[in-house]
Image (cartoon, rainbow, N blue to C red; front, top):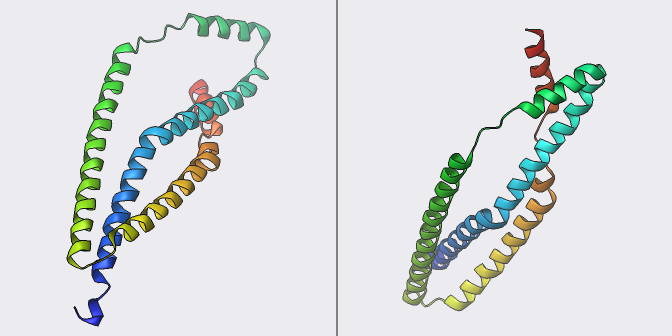
Length: 172
């Protein structure tokens, strides 16, 4: 092997393992912890918007109109979403299974290819593997911290847009 390309097999093994581990971790992390954080973000955004909106019109409405509005809202019949919820749940389960299969195949193929390249070029596979596992721990820690303290507290809902739409609808 020429000096120029001496480190190429080592680099290739590192890239293969890094991409496989990061992809597998991020996929698994999204379908477990990330899914729960996303659910929490949605609930927090809805709650924030509702809290912001409730103070807005109540100051403008008389007690009589408030009572009529409460009666109207109590009489609203919500659609039965059981069938739609089941369809979404079934689709999500199928997607999770497909993603798990793809990620497992990616991981196995990557490990086998990396092991083969390491043997062929006399590389220290356990050492390279351990380096990439340490890197994976770092990625996992950063992902967890980011979701927990940044994304989990992000408010994307804008109550002013909802208020504007309500006013535009009332004025029509």
